[in-house]
Length: 272
Length: 177
Image (cartoon, rainbow over the protein chains, first blue to last red):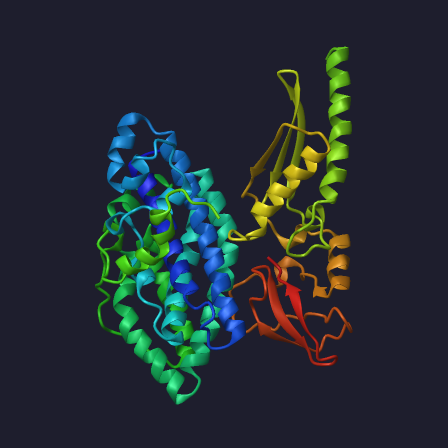
């Protein structure tokens, strides 16, 4: 496994894990019980998808030649290096530092109010849906299999979140106000979806990965349809916030990891 | 093929039959009326001899990526086989082709219904991103079609929540997938 592929798998896994962790914060706090259960079920799907990518990344790493392992060194959890055993999925999720995460910034933003979480989920799920659609045809059979499995789950996420965007946008004055507010805060982070990083460009050229720039038009078309139903306008402001794919994160990321990783860092290798 | 090989192959196919019967006793921990064979997650059972030891390899496919029942199911399969003396058991996870509710057996669907869970509709109907689709789901208690979706996600990832407007019971619907 090449370093680019290893990085790409971490990127795909990190997106799913970090958003899964954020959504899980709704456990016990959803506006109504049924929707509390819905968004945490989405968490479960996302964390399951992340596991498949981490498992594949760990397996690929363990089979790398020595010089390839050295090339991937910057992405490896420091604490794991002292364990003296093969790399495992949990090491990648629970022991990497903030700058080693490759997730999109939009996934790590605090959950905000219901409108914010819904709109973020919708933006992300539509992107992820088209990304998996492309990855089903990946020349890498493991990636293709994970994408084929995951897209079925993501189809439900798209449908559920789109319906909620419309419900809030076309609902009461307050719900409309709230989702407009969420839109003004979230829009600037949507550009990062389509901005290809060097590892994505390299893998897209070999047919292993998906070219994110090629997803932009489909994403825009899908969002426009839902927005017109919801009575929302696509903002004209540029969407310039990025950095996650390079490991440069928002101030919120460290807190998220501190909470998520606490147990494995305090009680190394704990199982429960 | 010489006589010994043929003999061995017959033993293997008899063993495979026995293992299938044992797998029928392994239940989905979340829906204990369904065996894992009803659910359609067992993709392959291989029995072979290696270094004079009989080995068993079972491939299963997850229903949902994050379904916590999968780890329990793997463990239950292993325990069931060890209990019956199969010592060398490998359980493999296979992702592709991805599991679909179309693989659920008719017997499984009937069991679900009598357990109070509406069985999945055929997949082609509703596994799409189209919004606000009204899916026709029969109430598993009174068989009425006069039902309403309460939530697309229910008590587990594989179920949605419905309410019957005739008998007023709420019930789970095993989503098509």
